[in-house]
Length: 480
Image (cartoon, rainbow, N blue to C red; front, side):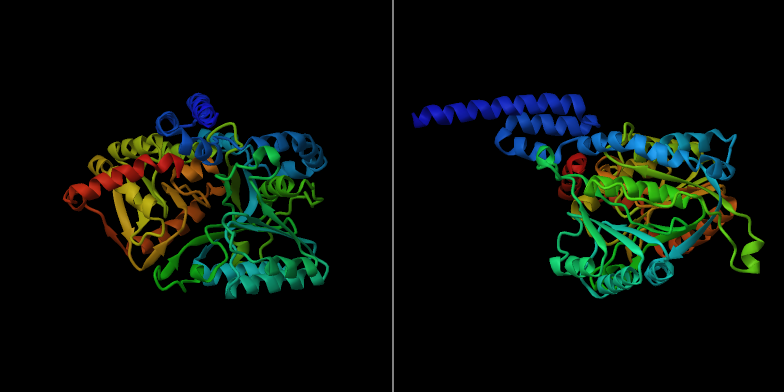
């Protein structure tokens, strides 16, 4: 009897492996990922079947269904303010901008101000000032929140805001902030802060859906001001990690109608996490200059591009490819995790071949070894095509910035890897404005002066074992 049961278990395991392989074939978003899963599911079903159902799901179907439930509610809510919102729609005859709007499912708006925040001191000074100035509500979410000196400072400021009558909604990713202690959350709740984790595994049907992350970093104050960028909450983001050293990152402060794009993305995430449709202000408020110098500056157009595994399209990957194809003179990209899919790799090489100054800035010091090793497998082909690759020297590079010619730039949370393209909820601000592009140009020029340029010779002379290790790491990149 025992041997019969063992045989039945083995048979059922292989059946599940075959069925899962068929599902991987039909639903995986990359051929590389499909092949990796199919081979694993057919040869090692005992290990691969549970791994696939935890890590291999290609789309966040629960979020898709929840989005369908709330779409009509959101449309009704925004319809009331359509007449007020219309004056701030920035009509553009530029086909490149229209394509970004189609990807974003959000409009390009004018009447905004985009302010670059370089590194941690400037970023958190601005974030905390925004929290202190809040009058009605604060919407705040981070991928990582730590219970250290910086995390405690954030907690105290949110507590004080709630105690003075401001509604505070605090959202964090359950995986990214897994070490956040319950007492931190309890203290916030006792002060009146509404707290929730973003749980991709919420509900019985999604119990094993653990591979999706909410990687967004968003703060919205009263629907008037918003912040977006690369920073999480932890002292390492202030450069206090001895191993990583100086932390180079970029955030963005937005004022104006584009803030409602950040607000809408948070509104959707909060609904998934809590089931609640919170009441917010949807009246666009154009940027108002605080000084004579600001009055002399024209307002800027901005489009917010949320992306994630609930999208019908691969929004983040397509946005990056679109930026590459749009560039005529220069495309400068910074990313701490640079393992782009084949489409992005091909687009980068072709851009360099047609004479575009394509530069990729990456960290010299790794914080994720597999991702770091993966890049070595395809960088030689990049260099041969004319792509210039730079390694940042003073510390760890974490900013996610793109500069397209002298006409547009973006700041957000998207890394150039499979996780950001297909598994993470991300958000990007695209600013098609020459003045803003000039500011980003100057910022990145300073960063490039702190980099060393990677040569083809140093990559080709690596020992065989390191080349094999890099290739193996790259093959695992679709399922990382």
